[in-house]
Image 1 (cartoon, rainbow, N blue to C red):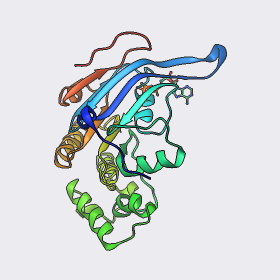
Image 2: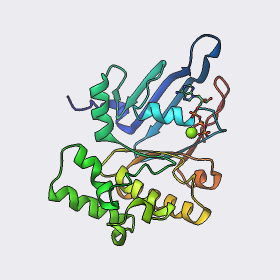
Image 3: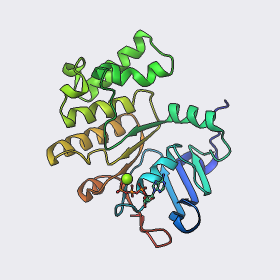
Image 4: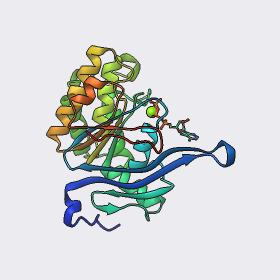
Length: 237
Ligand SMILES: Nc1ncnc2c1ncn2[C@@H]1O[C@H](COP(=O)(O)OP(=O)(O)OP(=O)(O)O)[C@@H](O)[C@H]1O
Ligand SMILES: [Mg+2]
């Protein structure tokens, strides 16, 4: 696959969405979720996405993360129009470019923390000592070196989520997408995980989009995108 073409103004944008539309179902049960949405996220920016439950925040993140396709509109990632890519090209781009953190950690129960972090590299066929070294470094970056051989059920909720953050960074993504990453955590753990994500975002020069219900957290990001029901206006602060 050719390298993404980055040129002109697009150099500054990691995500560029124009006229996005997405709905689910057909006929009378059809629900329009996202309508004529424009979003631009500059490289290096950390954008919070907030909005009421059911408004389409996860749907939006899935589309940007190439886990779902829009019905209408144009999506560019790193200046490249991804609309024409086939399934395999999308999977390739997703694996190389995008890291995900979800509300639930989705760690594999039968792997310890270190193997969970190394898993994306293993799936990509990299079982090298360097890959293991990178997994160890990432665990250290989330302050969990001393939990490397603990299994998910031997970790606290905050620790599980920190392992999930380390795993999201395993492939050296450009774009970090987090869907309510602290939604299952208490205030203290929530703050700790967010601070960590913010720190790694800056350290790794990432572009990040964080869906959250937490206004305090949203205000610590570089910008807030307020998603309103389809067709209504929204603010981009
Ligand atoms: N695969 C699907 N099939 C049908 N409807 C769906 C599907 N995925 C999402 N929806 C609907 O689209 C709307 C937006 O869902 P989405 O999960 O994006 O909301 P959200 O803003 O993330 O909500 P929450 O804050 O509760 O996580 C909801 O009404 C949901 O029921
Ligand atoms: Mg959601």
